[in-house]
Image (cartoon, rainbow, N blue to C red; front, top):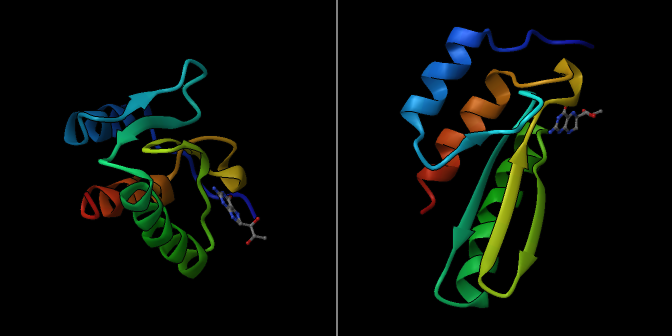
Length: 96
Ligand code: H2B
């Protein structure tokens, strides 16, 4: 089932609201790199994100090396950014 993409204005407002996040070049995803004190802290964060992802059936693309987590949020069902990515990014900010 397709769901609506954020409009350009909604995307711009989201990026203003969440200064750590940037828009991917194709405009279809937002990205952020997180740095933690060590692997334990990074993996604890990833666990919280994973529980949210499973509960909401919305999953990040991510890459972890030791204390660094690179994350991409996009919505396959929108072929771009949707309110699901906005909600997830806001929630993730609350885990930091
Ligand atoms: N994750 C993300 N990031 N985008 C989606 O559109 C999505 C998902 N869809 N996780 C879900 C799973 C869908 O494929 C399943 C069938 O509900």
